[in-house]
Structure formats: structure tokens, C-alpha cells
Image (cartoon, rainbow, N blue to C red):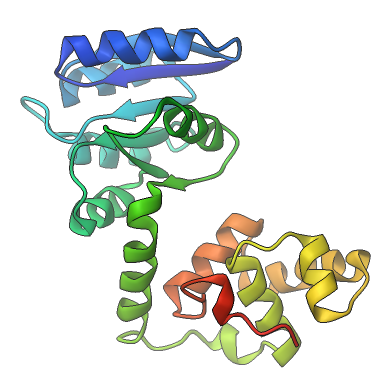
Length: 223
């Protein structure tokens, strides 16, 4: 069961979210807050799996509350649910520790997917914002010195990383690079060790932060 806390200063929206979430057999709303201080108290008391967090709230705002939750209760995953579509708000949320960013006008399926992804260690960014976020990370990466670890990657490892960051599965990568699927799995394990990451999501984020991820699948080489 995914235990969720709702944080939004609009009661009608919270009620709608509660109804949406509690129609799902694997989700339970365990608390509601209408400001950034109250949601922190609820997180401390209830230790939920996921917080659906608004940005604009009275008193302490959602970004500040997200930052404190990420610092004090790192096992609690925050998904920001906001009306703002500017990439600056997305960056602030991600830098504060949010693992997802969904627009309030999104469909129910997107909200549910974000909650489930957050619970299982994944991340969801509104599709209309994702390309902007990737592009900005690439731009920022050009200002940074590349970490020594990237220089240790072979051409094959670099290609593996780019295909992974583009969203291809192990089976798809194997077909594109002419490897057995088991070979891809083993080489990715070695790659994760080199990069100091533990899973595909962290490896993809690493690629994005260092300007190695393609903006879309068409940019990825298949050999």
C-alpha cells in the first residue's frame, strides 16, 4: 500500500485528489495539510511514502517544505503538483529534492503514475516540460568540468549510457548494439560501478547532468 500525504491550500483540490487516489487499491491517503509547516509535521508523525506537494501555500511554501523533507526524511518521496509550467519552477523543485513534477491540469493517469513511480524509486516530469529540463541540464553541464569518471568510459560504455538515457530497455539496447541481452546487463552493472550509481534512473540523471544524454531517441547512435 502506497501511503500518501496531500499538501495544498485549496480544500476542494485536496478533496478531489483524495477521491482520485483512494479509488486505487494500492494507494491510501493518510493525511492532508494546507501549509508547508503542517505537511512537515505530518511527515514526521506519519512517515508516508509519498507527498503530493503544491508550490504556493501560506506560510512556508512547497519548495521550502520539500527541501526540509528531503533533508530530514530522505525516504519520503515528494512529487510537486503545480500550476506553473515554467522550467524555472521545475528546477527549483528538483534542486529542493522533489522526484517528480506534475502540472495540475494533467490527467488522472499522469498523477497516479507519478505517485507509483515515486514510491518505487522513479521520477516523473510532465511530458511538456521534460525536454526543457533536459535541454537546461545539458546547457548547465557545458559550464561544468567533466568529472574524471567520464574519461574512463569506453566508446561502448558511452553508447550504452546514451541508449539507457534515451529510455531504451536492455532488450532494445542489445538489438541496437548487437549484443546478447545478458551481455548488456553485465556491462551496465560494470558501468554503474564506474559512475558510482546504483540503478538506471541514477545513471540517466548522471548522463543528463553531464550533457551526455540525447534530447530524443533519434540522436542516439546504434553502433
